[in-house]
Amino acid sequence: MISNNTSKSVIRLHVNGESHDVIIRFADTLLHTLREQLGLTGAKRSCENGDCGACTVLINGEPMHSCLSLTIEQIDQTITTIEGLEDSSIKQAFVSHWAIQCGYCTPGFILNCHALKARHPDAEEEVIEEWMQSNLCRCTGYQEIKEAVKAVLQEENTLLNETKNTLD
Ligand code: FES
Ligand code: FES
Image (cartoon, rainbow, N blue to C red):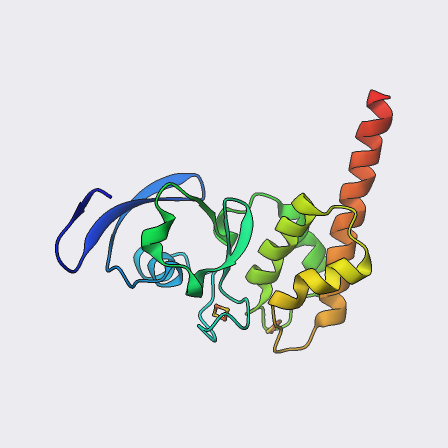
């Protein structure tokens, strides 16, 4: 924490590879700070209750609902939003598989997919479905989203196998 008075504090956040000093109240959510102070509107405000996943960001690589995460708890954490996601192959897969309709849920799904790829690149359909349950799509494009996620994991597995064969 850099400074504080009774109602507000200045803290430093690490977001998308950059450090930002932000003025917060103790009750501010990370979603609020990202959108209102840093102008990062990729994390969407929707239920604000942990139910929909539209606000998903990565905190130290783990998908988290930023509407339920207090900003004050993010000091020294590494935060990634859709604006900072470098893995464009996931974005491309969502486009190629028509997994975007209104797009409101898409950043959350993409960040969740990124974490799934890192944690379970060999995930079977059941695991994919379970993993994606934390995100809702009001346009109900679940089949297309699932196909996009499967394509991402398939590509990752092909790459991993090729690397393994080269090293063997
Ligand atoms: S806005 Fe955070 S889970 Fe719905
Ligand atoms: S694409 Fe519209 S909510 Fe998912």
